[in-house]
Image (cartoon, rainbow over all chains, first blue to last red):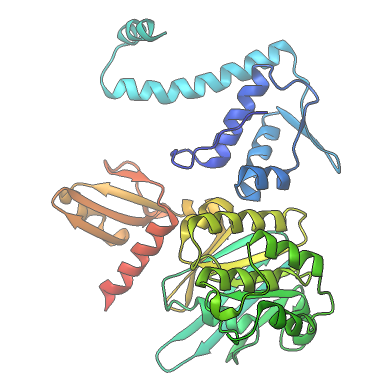
Length: 121
Length: 284
């Protein structure tokens, strides 16, 4: 599991944790059954507060990406390819909604956005 | 279980008073205690340790009232203050031998481990130590008798950035197994932004806010607008600064109307402290 936290980012740290781990799960880098480090240990290593890690783990669990076994820890959930795709799309749509409102603030049409997107893609 | 439970603490001095100070720290977590100089941090800490007589209120440490169980509780508390005045002509070794005899659970192995980590030489005299080294020595003492609650007053203030970073690592290692809790006061808020789980903010003898760190910060927004917009929002602002480019102010998130064309961001702990201090000034 790879995590890089930025203290200067506007994003809350728990969200950075959540986004990076969920991306790794959805890309298949962290496979089904992968055991996440214990919350307190992760907090010490990442140099963030315990509650921050707890929140990120809770968010991952809420979305069904990981599950908890009491006394054993947290594990990456088993997801069918269809579920993976669906969750990936949910996340991408969320980001697109944010980007779209930015484009709209300049009055761009969807066609203009397509054209610009083609240039950078 | 609560490591620390303070309820309705009152203490009146001629020119200053603690008013109904209440906050709780759950076992196994780190709480940062912030406030400007003279806000009441040290008075609160002294009250917790029963070093000053309180007018009213209740202080429980690990479920026990400090006044009734002082001797027993102090075995389980490690405390260190930013400015310590040891007898200066003795060697560290001599002083430690005196201090360790007070503690039933003194752990020599832990003590020497901290001396090594802090680069302290026990043959040095206290007079030969720099400010930072004195702080480190008192921390080594506080950490070497199996304390379950650490109460540290400005432990990082005399330390350079490297030593502070080192100390924060130690704090996080200490709470990792969930048994030890730490309350530390500081005005270097960047130390807390990383490792603290809870923040308690005291201003002018009163607790302004005590909550989980991200929730604490989320209670406030820093707003940034044009001078013309100031009148419309002024009454809701905790405090503000104005210049020819516009104004910046601190507001309670619940009072902020996102429909207004005013930019808002999350403040840092330092910004929250600064604007509350300005609020005080404005009323004088």
